[in-house]
Image (cartoon, rainbow, N blue to C red; front, side, top):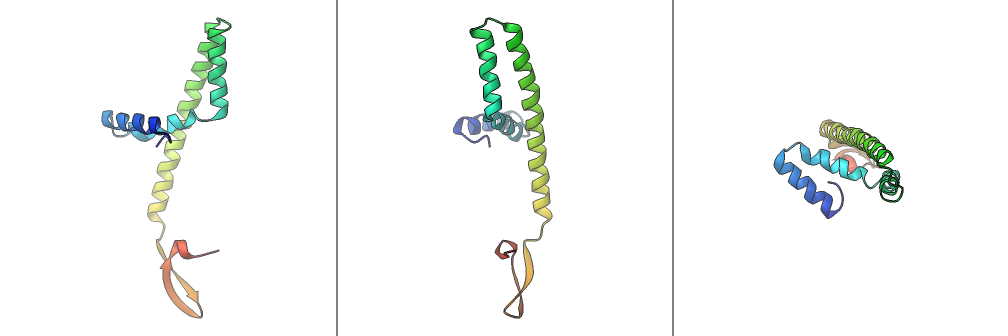
Length: 111
């Protein structure tokens, strides 16, 4: 989910509207935690409120919208691909311990 309780709440609400929306919204909300994104949001606010420059603020917000959306979609796709990879990985393996071959969980194998 998006991390904090607000992100989780929004993701659950999105999931009620459309089941596929929850993970994407969670990924989108996680983008808002990035320091550079926060800095750009602040600069858009300063442009609008302090400098009274709506055009610059709108440009910054439009760019942020595009960047965050693309990043969120990529994050969602990466998570989906990782989940598919995990589903095909073996859970158990065969190892030689003390001269004997035994079966164990793959998480117990140390490289």
